[in-house]
Image 1 (cartoon, one colour):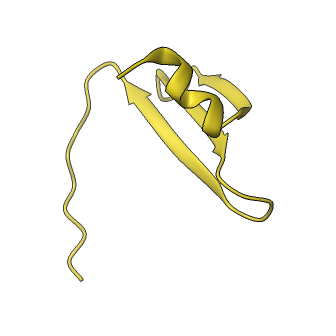
Image 2: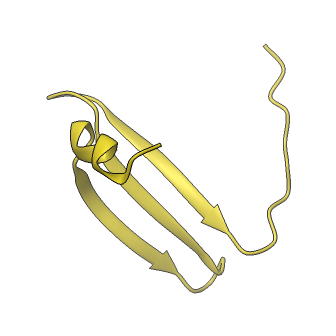
Amino acid sequence: MKLNSFKKFPILRENYRPERQDWKLDLKCSEVEKLEIFGMKNPTFKINPS
């Protein structure tokens, strides 16, 4: 994927959370919605039943 593909989702906020040792990135999807992406050093995977 080309890096410039992310221009469709401008970065609203980028935060390092030291208590969790992770990064949280908020991207703008539309005027009322945002996408949250988390980057973790040692991720744990959870499955949410539907």
